Image (cartoon, rainbow, N blue to C red; front, side):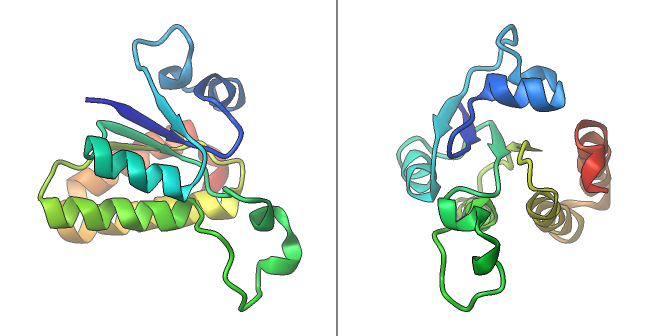
Length: 146
């Protein structure tokens, strides 16, 4: 099993500095494969299968930081939300276990989008109990998105 950290420029130790969540600590037993964009994310999952833990950044390209593109009809490169959708499609198609999900993005709107997508999946397709456990953990890790 492996753990996947999606971020265009940060490493897990940087997420530990931001949020203080122990799984990102250099002293943690959790070891990560870090990928920088959606292409690397897709390729890693296609090559190694669904990871045990996934941590999401939302903004993965320079265009995602440019406010002029936020309401544009022009397609920007895939972001962390697109990766979350791909992960759940893969899980549903392969009937594999759902990994533990974490969100380390500094973008509160993007973080909430990713959270809401997984919460809805858990609530409607897994169980309300799983959705509530997920929400409780994310509320502790990321109170800023609630």
